Image 1 (cartoon, rainbow, N blue to C red):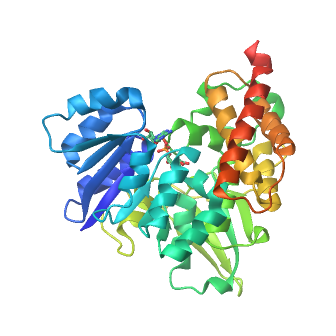
Image 2 (cartoon, rainbow, N blue to C red):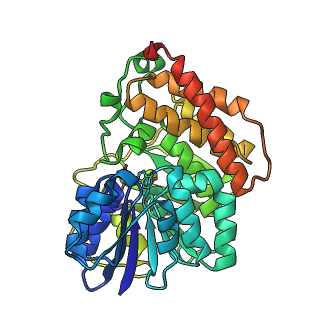
Length: 388
Ligand code: NAD
Ligand code: MG
């Protein structure tokens, strides 16, 4: 029996994780659930899964959540400190880190410090502070198992292999809803277009990141830290069918690929059940439906966020943190129609050139860089064509 803390249980990953748990009641038990502001769904989930504790980080929702669960023996906590605390509990075996954005960093780091098994969906944590998180895991003995489908694929390809024998990893990208489009088309796209992903249904932030290809850039940096790779060992190929979830090429030229239908429940299940592989009855790949698997080079010139993320990876230090902060802010603004699709890349590029470089940042440096980058980015959003 694995006792889970699911952080971000009301999100796309969180709700799918609870579907996996519900399908395997003899394998998983829910110890903790958390959400930012959706108190109604959190209360509903708590009633169904009967965790020991729930945490809400938006203070204005605390009273209503507490009230909704008053008849049950469930502890109700509020605030981020509570998150950092519960993940250390003796009664928690595995923490599913499924909060979106840098907001997930403190609780993930706390779980890693406590030596927990961490099923990691929150890629921004590794983008911002991958060196710190991986070093801490080495010291504490925490095991990090990726939930992101590409990284789950690479992880699965590496089982039984010597990491020294990896030549490179190839991350596959669907290309998103604007695959093949050029800048003259992208200038006019609205959030409502960008929210329509062809292959995956996900939270709003990652869906926009998939449309700009920032998501793939974040995933390059995520892969670097998770698998201890050099920048030159990480490649991206566009594979619109999303059947191959990523590949590893070894020193003898052999390539391993992990395949499956695009369904996040698979990598979630793999991560929380690891090292077991558990059965399910989800739809299987039928190659009669996929007679052609195709591959093409990403268009770095049109999808500049991918180029910017790659640049951030190579520059290292606090630059991925700065890029991530600027991106979080502009994505939020794009969702509110305050900045255009193309201006998001402009703003990220400017912010990356402004914030001063720190080669070996501490956690405090990361927090400061994040803060500084958001201030610059907010200023640029204010001057956007759309803000007037
Ligand atoms: P989502 O927006 O659907 O859900 C986010 C969850 O985090 C919610 O439960 C929300 O309440 C919580 N949250 C948001 N802001 C918070 C804050 N400030 N403090 C505490 N909690 C907060 O997001 P998602 O699509 O489920 O993505 C979660 C993470 O998983 C992201 O890092 C994303 O990149 C990664 N991921 C998602 C998918 C996917 O298919 N959705 C795939 C791969 C990786
Ligand atoms: Mg992914």
